[in-house]
Length: 295
Image 1 (cartoon, rainbow, N blue to C red):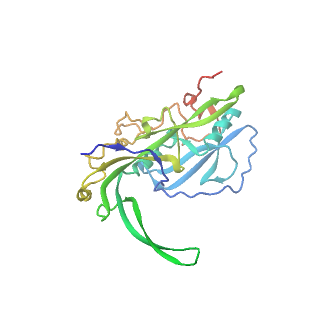
Image 2 (image 1 turned 60 degrees about the horizontal axis):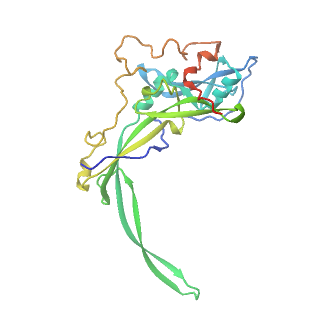
């Protein structure tokens, strides 16, 4: 068996099978609440998930628009500080994984490993040029065609193939400092085969294009063997995969546990109705990292 080559992680535009309707900002709501605050926004999907419950994404956004990017404004709100506003604006395209676990579980369950086969062939092309005297000349040139196909029987396959595997990104807020004490807030990310592996350090996710990455492992075999190879062939597919038999947010928990609570009691529960809550109940300061200042 040939040596395994781990391909570079590539950002790809992948779309969740759930239908997403993007609604541009339109009409604003009338809100007379005097304090700095952010409203709860909810995006609904025409699909059920864990326990056959409708899948949604819920997050807090500093906005008074009734709809924005497919999210609908709700009356629930949180009080925010000036610093909180910086955080919320930075993660406006992100949401807390713990508050939206059914969506994340469904996301992981919708992606599957795949196989692609590398092809290469040449063609002879003719082309015509005209010289300074107006005379035409016919020439030929060889053109090389290469690429990847999902057809194992394609006549131009070379015997090289790769297994594609999806990994899921988690994000965290990080404070950085520039000269003269100026603060910069950035989003750091890390990828994992199962998002639960990194949720404590990287508690946010996004439903935008960079929610998923693909990694590859590449092999070479005799091209006659290609039709026999499957994406889940254990000889070639040595990737780790999400532990989907456990539907809870805790990887160490038995999915047959009697308890139905997927959110720790000290975290915000988006299914609970609030009038006004404090931002400390929404932001987890342990995941907002602050590097040492440098002189």
